[in-house]
Image (cartoon, rainbow, N blue to C red; front, side, top):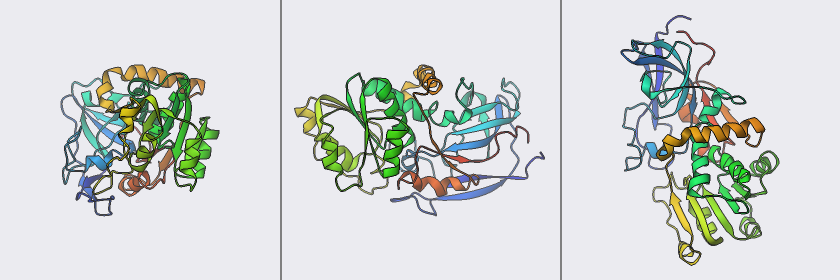
Length: 344
């Protein structure tokens, strides 16, 4: 394959006030002059992960990572292949790697900022953007450390058909809990029950949702990805000493003024705990999570589902709204290029 003349990248064009807009991002076509230097590698992106956290990345506010600046490449985790190496690197051309190079077809990366993929038995490369990647790490430490799920717990997961939620459901079952999911369509609820084998699922758009939800009794663990009205409702249904793992609040990410909670006094009455957490705080323990999640993939107790977007890197910003309108089931990823091509 001949060396490309140009490559594309997606940069932040302006900060959205509410939802992502068509002019939030722009595509730049740059001359291909990339050359890795000392301890650097040139990576060609093959897959990109699309995640709800991206809405926070473009908000000019204090958070666990600095906001993406106007004109900067949009932050994103990806899979790629090394196509050229600089002096002093131990990686080789053709090595599959993962890293946060963003929405770009090619990137120069310091070798220490990418991770060579060692794919366990029963897994494949794409799992490192889902079960064996940040989605899996988030679910694992949220369930194990924050929520401290134990056998016999009644556990509820909101956003249960998303990448983190689906893994959290399955980890809850592995821990011996009775697990219920909340999702936004009958098809998603059917998938959760029939494919992931959880104990029940509720469509929050159903007219009988709140009454149906009461039938499961009081909740010991709530793994929350949604926030807003759903969180406020579950606060009224807590068991004593309940634990809430506050993983995300996707219902509020596009709100110009996020809704406050009304029913938080139940935390006092039920001696309950609500705790936010960030997966990067557990980086030193990622190998522990990968071992257990890999075992689940091998024995079949952990299943995965991908929502794959074809069409190249320009489809990445166009597909982001799927995360916020319920348009995806499973892990949302974009196929940027053919992972089998290792050379330029």
